[in-house]
Every structure is written in structure tokens, then in C-alpha cells.
Length: 219
Figure 1 (cartoon, rainbow, N blue to C red):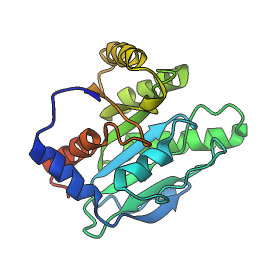
Figure 2: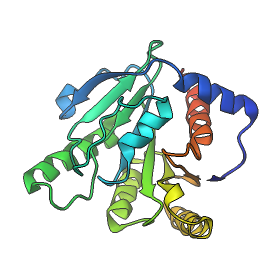
Figure 3: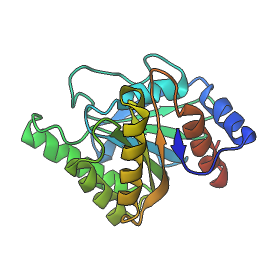
Figure 4: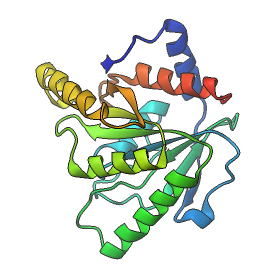
């Protein structure tokens, strides 16, 4: 389910082909000193610690364990880079944010790394910002959007766990989210609702990413 122009069959096929490649883990970067060379386009995935980010990445590439899902919020503590045989792009799993029980020094270190990555990574094309469809935008999400606006990094909002609420509630959440996005200059003006369990929205998400990469000479 999406609030944007319908994707063509050709665009959907491009997305399918991109994400059926043999994606593998490349490296984890605990800080800015350990980032890989910025020699290819990057699509990063951000969201609150319990938003289902690992599940979404795994569903996107059709693998069960590419990104490590955990029952413990805040477990991802590095920028995790994934690539594929043609080495045309990185997918980047960013540390979750907004988990109040994480140690304060760890949260501070994460925030420093995130800010540095977002503001200084020249090959970062877009951040896919994940929002739990059941809860909508929270203050921590507003803070992340403000950071992305300041860094002038384009971002696409994707709702997760959309199968967990009614269609009426989902439509309401999408409408409210779009209204909020209109206030943010770096936000891409569309929302995609997804479910890692049912596959909802993944054709559109794959197609959007493939189209973006094609426009910037990736893939």
C-alpha cells in the first residue's frame, strides 16, 4: 500500500532483479574511522529501536538472516553495510534510536556517529526512515527528521507492521504522516506501508530504490 504514483511494471521488475542478487554482509562500522570507502551509492535504513528494521531489510532482499534481528531493542550498535556481487550499492543498517534504557555514553556515541555519517557521507542517496504503523510519528522520529533536514539528506518514510492494524487506522496514519512530511524540506513526499510478514509494499519499495539508483548511475 502506498501514497504515491503507481509504479510501472518495468520499475517493479527492476526492483525485483536488484534485490534477488546475492546480498551479503560487508562490514560493521562502530565509528566514522571504520567506514568503507565511499565508492558507490548508499541507501541507509533508520528507525526507532523496535521498529522492525532488520526484519524489513531481510524481507527486502528475500533472506532470513542477512540483517540480525534481535528481541533486545538497541542491539544494533554499528553502521552495518551490505552489498551484492556487482558491488553497485551499499545498503546500510543504522543503529536504532529512541531507546531510553541504553547506557547514556552509548547513546551519545551512537548520536555522534549518526550525525557524522549523515552530514558527511557524499554517496548517501537517501535514508529510508521506518515508522511503526501502529504508533505513527513519535518525538524521536521528529528529532531524526529535523537532523535529516539539517543535513540535507533526502529521506523516504516507510511504515512497518502495517498488517497489525485495520485498513481504516492505516489510512489515517498515512494521512497524518503525509501532513507532517509537508513541513520537512528533505522528506520525499510519499509514504509506503509495508509488512515483512505478508510482503505488503515491498514491490513498491524495491522499485523506488531501484529507480533512485538508476537515476544516479547505480546498480
